[in-house]
Length: 168
Image 1 (tube, one colour):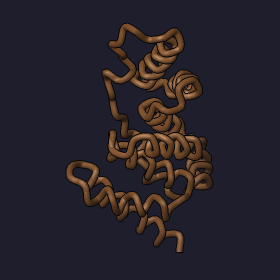
Image 2 (image 1 turned 120 degrees about the vertical axis):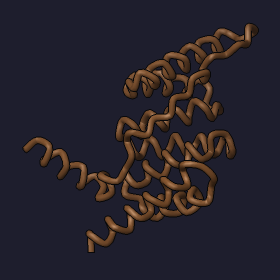
Image 3 (image 1 turned 30 degrees about the horizontal axis):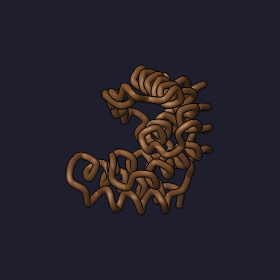
């Protein structure tokens, strides 16, 4: 009975909830580990926040990751990687609008770094937020890339069409 209620709540959030891939977790070891020895006190503090956020992210403790990464972005708002993993964490914590904002900020700060992964998460966040046109636009771009995201994009586009057909 609880599963049925949860499924109804998820459907109210987005009719696409059941086709969104919340299992997609991208381990990114090495991020947050700065080798520079001449950092300022603020840079050191932010680096520790980012490291703690990435540690939480790898442990799949997304609430803690959000806490640490949010603090890091407040102090150094022009670091694309901090925004990227903040967006990933928001998405994996089912906070679509915040994920979209963070991922768009990462996209603005770095057009090419981890573009495919970023756009994949952004697509999923758009679907969770019921912004289907934006999701379809990105999926059309992703399906023309090389690698596994091309296949995933084609599959998800088919799933969106099937979901839309059910709604009619």
